[in-house]
Image (cartoon, rainbow, N blue to C red):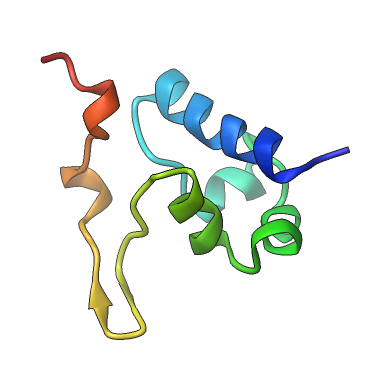
Amino acid sequence: KWNKKSLITLLKNFVKDHGRVPVASDCRQKLLPGVSIFEDHFGTWGNAKKEADLPVFGVSHGELYVRKEDYVPRSFRNE
């Protein structure tokens, strides 16, 4: 049913519809397919977001990422 392209589209549409980047709890709340679906296609939830050109929040593998509260994707800004 799902493929990489459709999942990336879902993530990008989530940002447009909700005005924020999705987090794993959005999957648990059934706003998106389960995290395991993204993991099956991308390896990790973070990789799925990276492939959709969305930030990954927090610290991962020694890299510090932006806080979700501070991030508005450039393509969605009202500039």
